[in-house]
Image 1: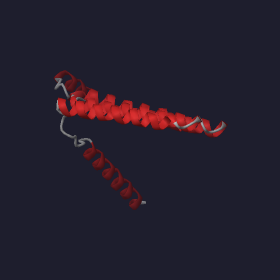
Image 2 (image 1 turned 120 degrees about the horizontal axis):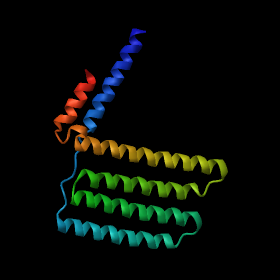
Image 3 (image 1 turned 30 degrees about the vertical axis):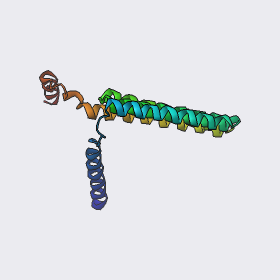
Image 4 (image 1 turned 90 degrees about the vertical axis):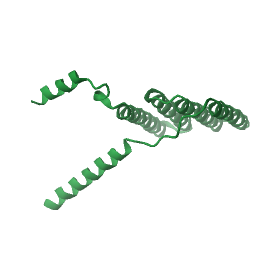
Length: 164
């Protein structure tokens, strides 16, 4: 019984340590205006090329291709914006755009399924989107420092009074 509790404590400590290390992700340096413009035009050119590839397809395959193409371009542009003008809000927006793009692709793939399988697929896709958005919110709070970011002495006193 004691070894069971020791294992649980060990896993909890490892999870906490892993989460603490993940709280400070390494970011690439901000983009210069010229690099931003260059990369944005590359994304646009790739989007146009991918759209042309989708034109030769039919039915659900075409819908999936178009969703992937648009989603990839939107996500890349949002990431470029976040790197050009870095902020917690820009990073949060980029993660939300990516979550929505992944959801659109998953929905398009689910449309090819029938009845119960389609319903389960859509439910899983919606759950994945919601989880990604929740994770983006957590990361934004971690990035901004949470309630103590402003150094609010009143908020700190309030929390200490509640603990007493």
